[in-house]
Amino acid sequence: MAARLKERYRNEIVPAMREQFKYRNVMQTPKLEKIIVNVGVGDAPSDARLMENAMSELAQITGQKPSIRKARRSIAGFKVRVGAAIGCVVTLRGDRMYEFMDRLLNIAIPRIRDFRGLSKSSFDKDGNCTIGIREQTIFPEVDIDAVTRVRGMNVTFVIKNTHSVDESRELLRKFGVPFRT
Image (tube, rainbow, N blue to C red; front, side, top):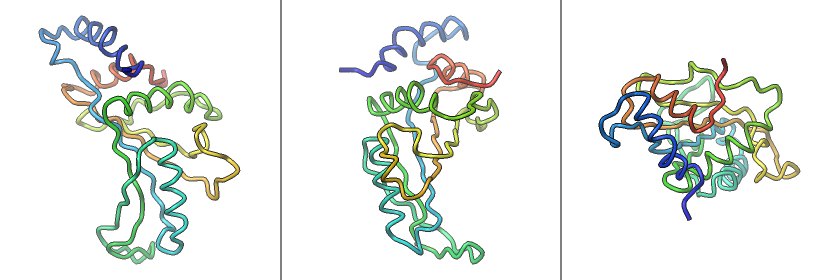
């Protein structure tokens, strides 16, 4: 069974984008390639359980096992050494990506207190969008009573075949990403 947003992309978003930006070919249409969810665990070198908790919560949220990210250089001010585990990341593609995006947009983001929309300036020069989430408890998969420490995460939407930031923003807007006006 295909994800709901995947069907919407094929049947509604692609024709609308082709008409709006005058693409001659379907393959010119921008497409969501992957979603990367990254959690930084700065206290992990001092307490290994913090990394385990972060990994299990990220696995619950995304439905996929995270991989550990290690420090590439030492930073004395943060007491970080080369090779120390400092975060975990998940890369979602295909149906899992669309299902995560559906849950993020329709369940998690509406649960954010005092939410006024996502910033339009969260795009890089290649048209990828990164959203910062302050606490993992907005996801219903996370048991609030089992949370030991509130952690933030970055969610990056990687978009391919984009020619400008405006095209990427319009694609995400058509998916239902709420931007500030």
